Image 1 (spheres, one colour):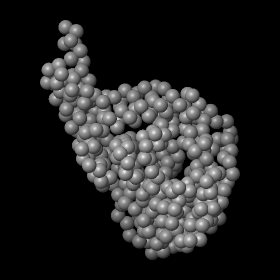
Image 2: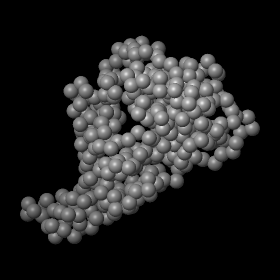
Image 3: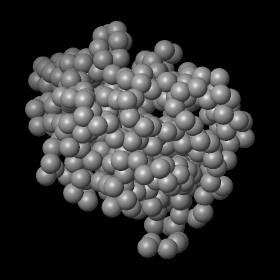
Image 4: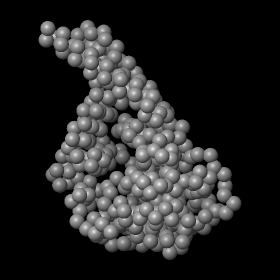
Length: 398
């Protein structure tokens, strides 16, 4: 009797997992498709001016690959780069000046804002300083891009054309992350897959929807929209600044767009699991608003959606429960099928698709570790700085 009840419970759990996957497949904005690229665009008659803002903290290792690509932008209008050296100890500012002198191209200004005051993350404090420098030139658009992002020569041109043609207040591209090491191949495509599942790109671009997100490595933003929505001041304590920026713009009535990149690549390596673990765990609990109930729900949700299918398949075969094995196998099949397009986008072998439950389990552990580090006072740490949770910040909210 007890064994029958246990098998029945497993069948229902496996059925719940399959139901979840069918809902994700058809009702979550077709998140698994990778055809969301820059929308149709035509060149404007007059090319607007652009201020390119690059916050940089200890980025000397990646600047030789990324900064020359910005300097070499083939942009018909006026564009200028403002690199903000955020307290680097590795000569980032000096290297940036040397690269500009060697390569030429767009004008470059290198400056430093000093240490961020209480209530600001270092990156957003640097962005604020860079935006202030750019506004002195009265640009129509601001390109906010990270120091590890390399742009193809026509990247800025295509971003501006898309923003003008579509009437977007913000256009963001999810940079193609590096996938060379074994751990990068296992973890990185899944990172983008999970992000798209949480923030379906199709919904982000629709007016009237609440879904809002951006990819902080590459955001083209109208300067007047930034001023109207008080960016970055309004989001100054945000650890996940790209999503906060998108919510501020969309919440203020702006039209935003996010898609996968064709001309924008991250050059930052994550060769070890430790490196990828830090990348995810530093902000995972902040994504859950430091809420233990949301953490519990996320862990249970990840287990139901990603871990139950293979477990149900194996358990069903082991105990002779055909229903359990079939339900688990179908759920695993749907999961695998939805992951294949992302693997193709990253040029990875398709045999990695059935391994997604293993990667999901790693992300589950990273999320739990993020919470543990937070309660130990080590959460949201990056390059020597640890940030308090937003509701712990005392400061002027005006």
